[in-house]
Image (cartoon, rainbow, N blue to C red; front, side, top):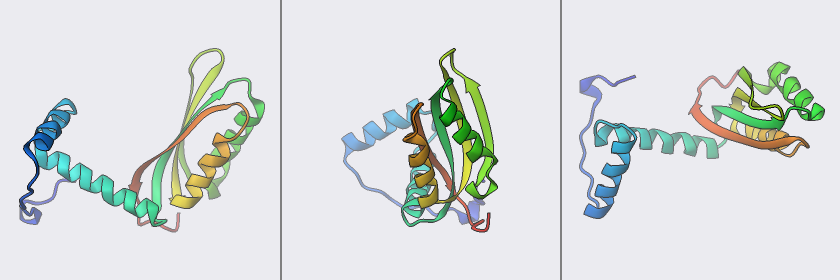
Length: 143
């Protein structure tokens, strides 16, 4: 959502020229049209991470790569997907090759609970990688 023009506040930032040049090069490669867009994204990311650290309710993705023949891992991932209390909003499963599969779960809940879930799944036999990626905070604490 783009704020209304009257909601925008201009402010000045001072920094070393070399740091600004490096920032400009980086945001250009990422497709930003201007510094303001990039700074807004950086501030949003910073605030979401602060909320995460404070134990807020968040929405995240849990990306799991697992051995396709790892029955325990497959069963546990399926159990997580079906357990409404674990806050799974949506799932995607993709076979990567004959030996490996990928599952992406969109999850919602308290940051600590989601971190514990990721740790539990990541430590399972047959799970090759498990990464929890923060997406946003939510004010919907009841879900």
